[in-house]
Length: 86
Image (cartoon, rainbow, N blue to C red; front, side):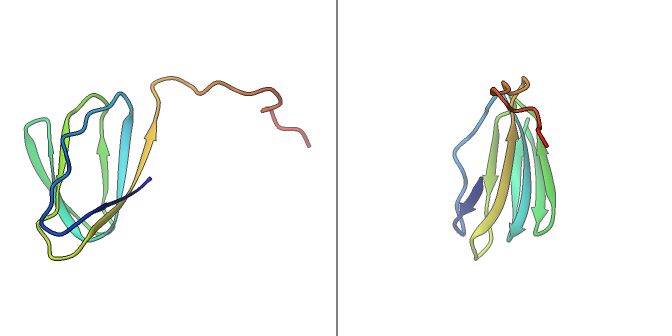
C-alpha cells in the first residue's frame, strides 16, 4: 500500500494484528514505536511488529512517501486450483 504524509503532519496512532514493513521512497521522518522514537530517510526499511502502536511524523518540508507491506498471522487460505499446473 502506498502511503503519503504531508509536510509537518503526523499519522493517527495505528495498531494492527499484522507485521508491517515500511520502505521509505522519499523524504525523511520519525516513528514513535513502543515508547521510543527512531528516525528514517529515503531508502530505509522499517519493520513494525504486530500489536505495537505506532505514529509516523513528517517534520520535513516535502511529502513523506513510503510503501507498506503487511502480512497476516496465519497462512492465507488456498483457493481451488491454486497449486501450479504446467
